[in-house]
Image 1: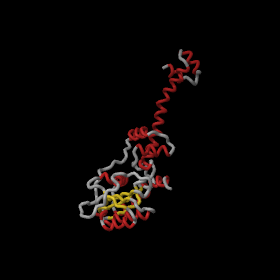
Image 2: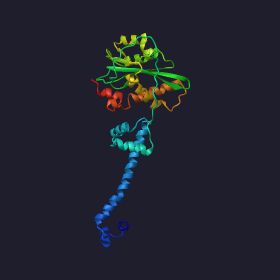
Image 3: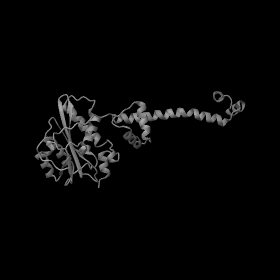
Image 4: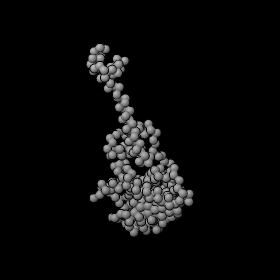
Length: 288
């Protein structure tokens, strides 16, 4: 109460004199002021943090959790720890988009020849064009199903080839494969890993690989982990761009997939396996 009285009358009577009258030290009074100011400073700091985290979270369309948001904020000049970002997200009720269980698309019940598993779940690479992987998934719109085939370079996780169609055919995977070959040079000897689907075992697809000097590799039967990187991409795509949205036409699906792959995923989205850089930036940083 004495300190509050001193503060109230500080404009009329000097603090030193009031302290002497009331039998308290001036240093004690200033310590009291400092302690009282700390909660306000913490609240102001917390408000600044929450605003920065919210802006970054919304800028990424709720696609990033605390690890990637922390990198994003630090690189933008806002120094912050991951646990502080996580606390801010919880405080504001901000939750990154959650995924659903992945379902296989291709049909492996066929009598076509199957390539050996050259990858054996070793997804590490020293440079581009060492190991690629491919797979297919399905996307729904009001006009019916759309099927997406992709080719990913495991070095940077960059999607280098993709194709969309309303039919799940061997031509779909061949179109994605052709796009990848057109995008890359020096592909002789690259391992192209897929599942055992009939589209990938087809004569047309295998001839396309051999024509460019690529080596076919296929997952063990029933082992989804053998092609985990391709499935991880589909998981990200569906969580971050598809789930919760309604698409009226196949063209609207195509537009979203194009934006996600070519604008966001390849050029902006951070990957932990790429030193928290986007695939394009990671490849540029490691270019010879």
